[in-house]
Amino acid sequence: MITVSAYNCSRRNLSSSLLFPLFKSQARRQPLSSFTSSTTRNHHPSAVSTPFPRPRCYHPTPKLTKLKISQRAIFADKMGLTVKATIASFGGKLFKLSHPSTSTGTDMAVNIYLPPSALKSPGTKVPVLIYLSGLTCTPENCSEKGFFQHGASKRGLAVVYPDTSPRGLNLPGEKDSWDFGEGAGFYVDATQEPYKKGYNMYSYITSELPKVLFGDEEFGKYLDSERVSITGHSMGGHGALSLYLKNPGMYKSVSAFAPIANPCECAWGKKAFGGYLGEENKEEWKKYDSTDLIKGEAWRGNKDARVLVDVGTGDNFYKQGQLLPENFEKAVKEAGVEGVTVRYQEDYDHSYYFMASFSDDHVDHAAKYLGLL
Ligand SMILES: N[C@@H](CCC(=O)N[C@@H](CSC=O)C(=O)NCC(=O)O)C(=O)O
Image (cartoon, rainbow, N blue to C red; front, side):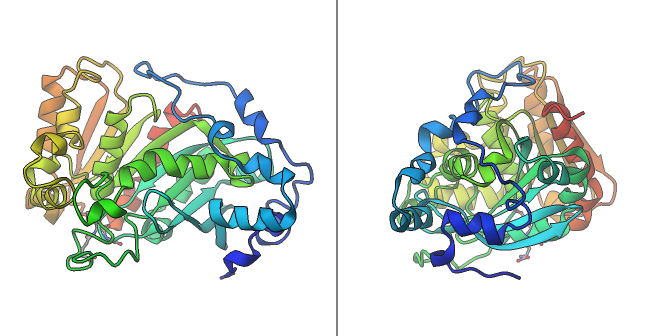
């Protein structure tokens, strides 16, 4: 593993050493302004806006060239992605990264997989699949054993694996249980003390992380900000579904493994939403609940929802009533929404054995709507 101190990670030596041979082979630098020329493909019928703001507008990296090198190093250190390791995987490269986050007030770890097609044709941006992980996970769980890289390599898409919460805030109670606090951010913006200080995973995933990724001087060259889909597992399945349903048009499609599909009605969701959003604020809870969101005005009657869900019938959390996919299915039916597929996979449990068995399907689901199939 290559470990690099943040001090050494100015943009200059990123290109010439850490990402070698990925970036060294790219002698000509592509200006960030070229991002704005990419055309939108495969508009989602329900899209109401351009998914992500154009990188040029919100990331000041282009101005780095006008700064003195000493200033540039400080600036890059504050804003950018620090490469911790580069690992070959299915013909592409997995980058283990971190960056300072204003949403959480901490450094955030994130892994990015670039497929071989991206590395072979620098300058050609590939679509992106964001994978949101479940309770207790870091970016490593799925990178190591979800096998998304297999399908992503074949179809030519990048996979982004964010962390599940801030780490190191040292808030009271933050580490008392495995299903709340550290490793359990639930993809909401907390409104309650002390968690509102940094448990803002909703804003982090939907707003800050895209700015960091697509605006990054190096990684931004490879990632297409206009072709993004989202997926996730368990708590991350709830995250993927709810972020997709809350933001029509932001993502081209969604899929989920064993999602917590109706958090307002299960023990995990009640604990998390109560702690982050307040025990009494049930109307706020519903704003992050996929079973409520699908019945909302934005989705009612939608004929092309682009949702794939897999649940294992041998999943103990499913049996305990933590996932409640039937409630989601009922809401879909009531709302007259079409294009939602919920599959029950015989005997599969909640683990990454289940995930790895169907990750190719989920990559293909995304690839279809990202214009790759
Ligand atoms: N307490 C156990 C079990 C936690 C667990 O099963 N976590 C799942 C996600 S559950 C819903 O979000 C998981 O993905 N675990 C990581 C893994 O690699 O399997 C524990 O602490 O592991």
